[in-house]
Image (cartoon, rainbow, N blue to C red):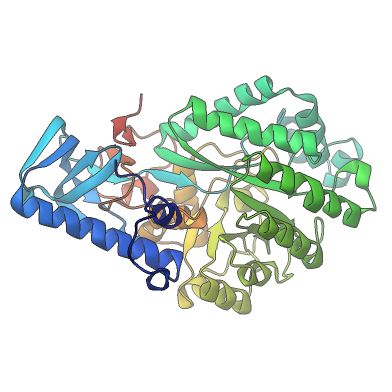
Length: 452
């Protein structure tokens, strides 16, 4: 059975592989070569015999997002076997195919499944009362003095059991799935104790078991300083590095490690320790950086070959250059920018200049971005940050997959990739950014099956 492309596991699963390791020096190159060989094999097969597949989908234009561009195949077709795409092209070029099931759409477009690469969906309670207080003139300081802010979410999360957290998170995740999300990242970061952080990560894993969606988990224990560690940030960072990260890794609950590098959270020096602990645990890193000030966090993330640096309103050209060199994705979070009424936009022109891949995410969280619509974030990225609709769609497909280290298996419609795609009754992909509000009707295909 051909599975999703994962270059390291591919080599392990073929002990009789005769290719010397020096021919595969880098994971990206390994996956690229694998895709070439895989596609070439299928082309050779189709020249001489019939392709047998589980399903064949046609009757719409395919917005492939190959290389982060539309690359539209008009009147296209997708053949799926074992949950993966085994052939894609224009219907007129279809080889001999035997399909167990065929599905014909009446026009419209098909895009890759959407990827929400930065969320905080698991937490206790909500902060709607504080939202109302602020609009009635109560200051952040007054709210904090009343026990509000992130401290209130930490308390609620600690006091809520796993089953309740799960039910609350399901309520938040389902609207994202209804809009075409097939892969979502979920962070911890509101427990801030070993027990509560692992509890959050277990709930996130459970979401992926209960619903037809790929869930990637991130340990964000270095999100804020818990109240019991007031004035002892270094001691808390020691707890994160010596206990929380190793326990999360040992339990298989974390796919990556994140931190918040900001004057109201943790310093670059403290984040460096967190990254070192992540590397010892064999986990990739990412970073909340340059949201409120320029601390060089994104350049720090790039030095550690981070998957992504997120927020980035105050990123500099030096940061952009470092991210470009390291292949670190810039994850833009317009929901937080909007709700906080920020005026400093991320340096989009610099990211374009230095060819930094830009992703977009909901940042769904209780305090600064209670967003349950990734498509709304596409619109906001265009209207607030001036991304083009093509850049915005790449931001929730291929570049979002890249921000999770999944660019070789997700994020575009290509042979060998997972068969996650969405049919929209639309005439062009720009409509995904154009229509404001409401849920556009869509048919979501997850791993080759229609998601109910």
